[in-house]
Image (cartoon, rainbow, N blue to C red):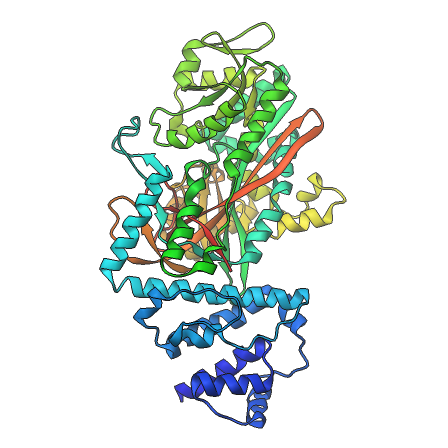
Length: 610
């Protein structure tokens, strides 16, 4: 009976990709050993609700439906039916529509394809290719894990190529020395990512750039949105205190810039449909570019090494570091002092210094000088002149680029004074204090309330629709009836939510029973306003092998987080630069709740677009 169900699913699959009845009969007979009349075939399809009234173009227009309907069934039945063999590892898998030498997999690459030249049919063909790509990589991973010698050879090859390309970082044991480095944690193969989700995230980024900038210019909105939060969270209160001081003195600099990253996951809903959901937006020290820019070279090579030549072409090169750096250069140029420098404000433990060097190198190519200083250096050696120009060691600073300062433990009393000094100065800040506050979790939650986006995008319904489509469920914990309802549902079903404090950097969120413990402690007082509640994402999962120093090699169920990078520069009322500058992919085991590269949870990845 199982066998009958399997071939009936093959009938459905071949019909959905557009094969004619006679072609379905032919493939079922020659490739699967099932022989049936055309009349019987039509009876099966009619029983399943299929008729040839659907056109190819109709089948091609709903990406999500195709993803759920075609690929998952095909992948599932393929594993049962095909009996994947060891020789798959040595097979070259190019996909041009002609017959291949793939033997056991011949039927995959020699299906009669009735795709014509129309746009819709081309989209369907591309979609079909993507499903096969995903199946091929999954099969290879399954076979590699059974062949330790082959696996170790590939892993060593990947690591050595990473070293050759400079995809390295300092170690936790020696964070302030470049004498000892290790490879940047990454996946052995790129992970499949739905093309529709990635394109959606990229398409909305310039709108998020604009939104962050508009929020930073609205003191009434910031004050109202953060009013309860600054009463409950000391760190946010101190940031807001600097903001109020700057506001009272009057902003000295009309040049504003942002280098931001918006993070997403693909949520698998209960009904099986996938949807893009924003996790957070980072407005200070957004990372992910730099040494990781060369990782596509590694992943293309790994795919080629196992014979997936055509699949390797799906891995895209990016110029994200150059594009992000261009915004810093534009701000420096607008400042108008050739001898002024860009100051990188860095931490004491500089494990990410080699990534910073990539950015610095791009700036030096433009003859823009860079210096690196810590809060302590600014506190001891920084000063403002009568025009509020910022000087460090006697050198004028055009741009302050914060690579640090986003966590409470980043600050001492002297550090807070240094932050205020820089914020009061004429130097362009990346980000300035108002843009920093615009990236808080509380602002993210407030933006999801009905009617709020309309304040920033009046008469732009399409922009609001694009932004709002990415929002997860976000709920206030402010004192009052609405916050009480949020507490009640979180305590009733903690597994459905994530509790988020006003923190960046990974490792700060609460899940499951930890939510209960936190809320039980603060539910009756204003301290709960330091948090927001968010629907927990149920991410689509894949399989991959995570490569990290001292991590055992094993096939791991993983989920991915898409990060989209954006850059903008505004001069007065004119937005002189507003761009999406690239994307990153970070991947972790589904056993881990929170994330973080430095924290040892997440690794870098590349999207294998499907």
